[in-house]
Image 1 (tube, rainbow, N blue to C red):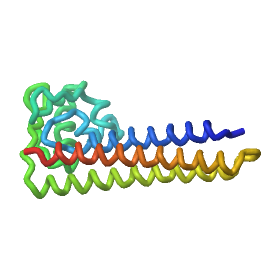
Image 2: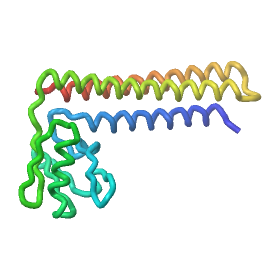
Image 3: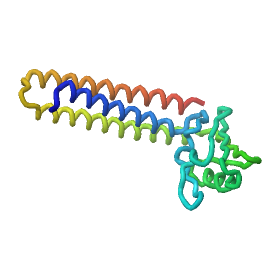
Image 4: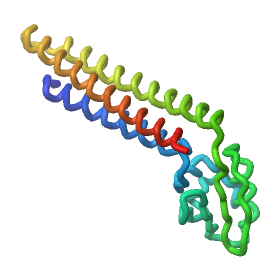
Length: 184
């Protein structure tokens, strides 16, 4: 049997997951600094199957504008290098011995604006998910039996405040990520 505190707790949990998802999506969007998760989308055809790059190699960012990829199987270095080049990230990796250097090209204004649009799309998806959590919570409250109308109204106000707080968190994340992307 659901209760108002349980419904609010579930809504908060759901919204926490939505925020975490938005943060993860943002981390895959390249800003000026190199981070290993920039290559999260790279898939490598190895041993007859598609694998994530981080399953077949270690990825490090020793400098702000360079990633170093070290394949676990040194015999696969050319395949890994090709996968990074063809991942549509605008990167030009080069194999050097047992490692692959991936220098990050400087971003132009046009590319930065495109990335800001991507960030806004991810943020909008997050906001939609938070609205869904609020709607779901509201519907659950309306179905409660033996709860006064005043208690439901009060709980709905609390749910709305929760919603507003989480939407605000996403707006803060957008501002921070935009500043990071636009920083030259």
